[in-house]
Length: 66
Image 1 (spheres, rainbow, N blue to C red):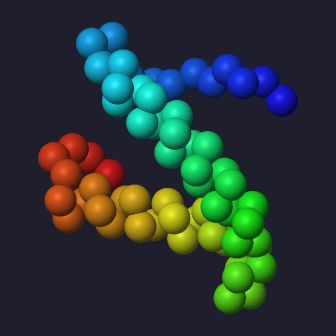
Image 2 (tube, rainbow, N blue to C red; image 1 turned 90 degrees about the vertical axis):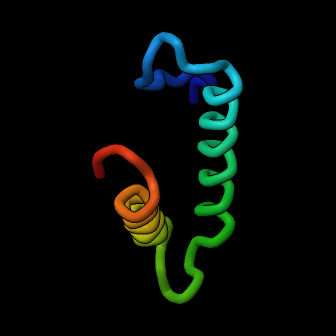
């Protein structure tokens, strides 16, 4: 597995935001792996639940599109 990822964003995105984005990816990957099987949900189902939470948050509090 490569340690390099491609991130879609604007060229003027602050380096701190990119670091936070990458930290989130690492955290969530570990979270889903450790929580596999919780409440009868596998990793894919947990990820779908997470996506739903992110989209709901974007719709309710962020300026942008979801």
